[in-house]
Length: 77
Image (cartoon, helix red, strand yellow):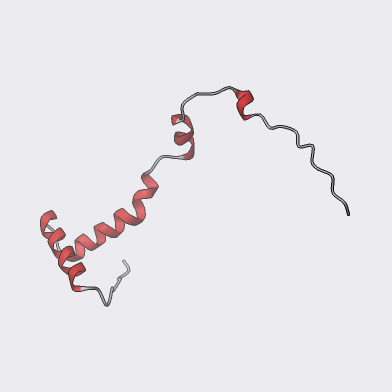
């Protein structure tokens, strides 16, 4: 396992970490690990693109989303 040292933290951050750790019944170091784990790995547990697309309501007609031919414009070279 790797080690991570965080320097120059404001005292209020350290106190908040210790308070939060105490509320959860673990050490400040264990709380720090849990915060990092949740912040960095929790997004993996989110919905997939497929799930987001399936959650979209089925409104509108296909023609509403049809692509129209671009007739362009005259350009003088």
